[in-house]
Image 1 (cartoon, rainbow, N blue to C red):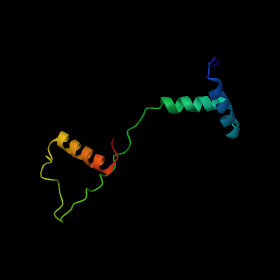
Image 2: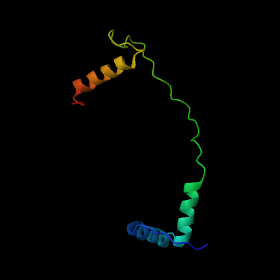
Image 3: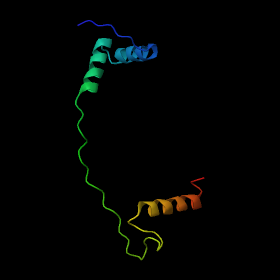
Length: 88
């Protein structure tokens, strides 16, 4: 089927170069791109979670940090970043 497309000049130039490099036609390149874009997406396979490190040398959270409070954990992280000069 014939159709007319209004493409960005720079994009069209890049597509023509890619088609020539791959020794294919511009039509075929556009068809491949559309096929890839319209293909149903599949979620990536679930990866095994990496094991969390466990420390037995008496380290842990400071006494004033509540491990069940996101606010407490975020505040502690911000304080550490401020002390290390990573936040302003």
